[in-house]
Image 1: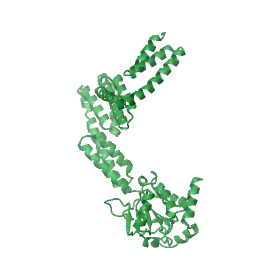
Image 2: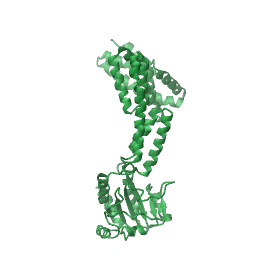
Image 3: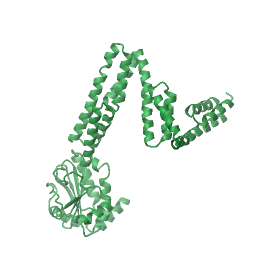
Image 4: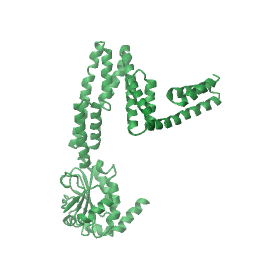
Length: 416
């Protein structure tokens, strides 16, 4: 119902009927022909440092041209919905669609409208010839151009269902093989970050950047091939290290063998070699008790490290209560690990900051009170051992709070 109303509102505002749109389709460049390029007096929102958008250079993307006129305020109604569709992740920049606004209005008239409607796609201003080339006598129109640079559809802006369907159809018939320029700039930056990380042997960082570059680029694009090559290189580095495990086991150097598996797990997380390192360590643990002894120690280190990483991320997002809980678990559950010392140091820093510790105590209060209430219910129900287990949990997990003392006193009153 809402969508129908919006389309109707656009139709009324534009003052152009469908029949008139069909009449115009018979003029100018026709469906199936190569789309004429846009010659504009000025451009708004063309990316800094880039040349102005060219339909020839945009081949490989599905391009949508939206024409509107200076003498009518229909664009006030139309453009927010064009902006909405163009910003949709499925059909916007990450989907391989490039939208261009085209108007006969000059820069001075158009720029305030672009700013007011918060548009982010490039807009060609002072355009007259392009509207004639496409057969839009009224300067109102929408054109969908396929990845080969040919016109796939011509119509009117108010026929949103029609031209949006054409966009979707083109994505299915001929998927974009070029990454949108906005995304391409991000991919280039990510690949640069990955290269720098590899040079510094920060392989986990490199893998994260390379995988994001892969997700942002489209199949068939050179940038996607570069991202895949980067991931393959990281896997190759990891497998070269993992290949030394067998020699270490044969030499009965179990500490070294477990360390290699752990380093590959930690430094190549998210890659194929990471999964193979886990499988190799699990298999060796079943086959060799001496390796298992070393690996179990490293498993605790890995768990503590993962929790510590999550705690640091929680601090960045100002979720200090959750961070404190994770740090406390490291200290209590993995006291013999290297991360336990770092976790305790972070807890100590939290306690010295009154504001931070205030958030922590608020978080403590909620969790501890919930456990104490549950324990009381269990006690009243005659489930003494379960109540005692919860009180002991409060004493362990909230040992720096007043709730630990309350739990201790309640345990003393239990009949079991």
